[in-house]
Image (cartoon, rainbow, N blue to C red; front, side, top):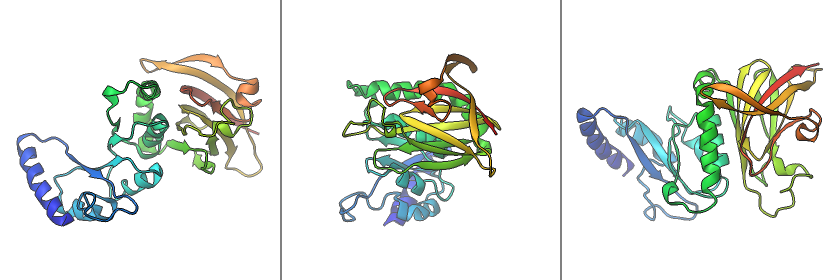
Length: 276
């Protein structure tokens, strides 16, 4: 059935492209645990039939998931196979959606991220995603410059998730939820809004961290060395130019042991490291 849906869609898309040669995508309403095929659009471009769709619908440029399922990373991994770029035309508008946006753009070079009914929201959820978009817009020139060279990483951390470890440049970075710090104002909350961010390497020892609710530590890849922080500055970009704000120190960077963006806050931090 997936083959017939794909080939029909391809014929329609190809006819449209003959008149207007625009990129085209197909939404995928994801399969859900315990729901039998036929109870959801089971012939759509789902992960287990992506290869069928790519073969049967070459006029379709992107297979795009609608995100209403848990385990965001799992589904993102599935939809970035076979040369398919991540394009999210619809995602549940819920707490933590801003953290997922940072992660999607940082970890997957996402092309689109759109919470469902974003234009009609009258809740407090509107402010975080708006702030996240503002920060992403500021760093978009850096992403365009450094992401093709593999110099960007993304993080998504939740209450029940283990630390996220990745390498970038000459360092190994470990990301945890900011509430894992016992003194954090949100540490004793029963529910933690997910934290997330992206890290951009602009020089061997120089990085920009963009995100919310995240704490990041660094260690050199070289054995026998340690990493220290030359400086950690809050700030923003104005027309592509970095404008530093506060220099963080003391408790704000744990005496030079980590960088931190508190939960419910949205920041860009400029980080310079050294090894000894």
